[in-house]
Amino acid sequence: MAATSRWYDQKRPGLGLDFLRSIGRVIDRIEAAPRTGSPVPGVAGADIRRVLVRRFPYHVVYIDLPDRAQILAIAHHRRRPGYWLGRVRR
Image (cartoon, rainbow, N blue to C red; front, side, top):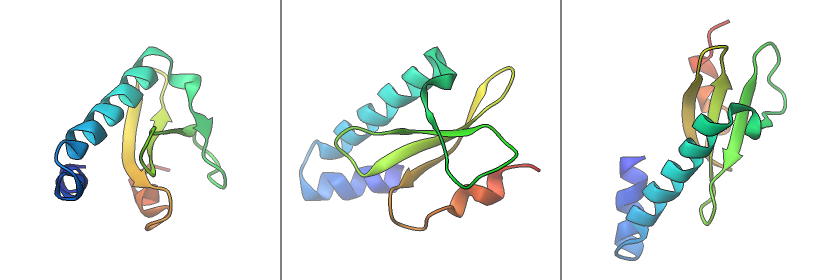
């Protein structure tokens, strides 16, 4: 996330901060209503969900656990799809 923020800042000063704020807003939404995200297609056996990040080609992937929502990844829509699957305990 930090590297992506720096990359956006190189493209346009302040854009990296906008990226981080957008991620923060998504995480706030997830904390307030964990069921708000859509289920990740093709992942069975766990309640893994994602919420799109406005203005940026990213989504926040998380698992909805009984006592909390655990962030698994801040994932780009197209780069390295599913790289975070190893973070899911079976």
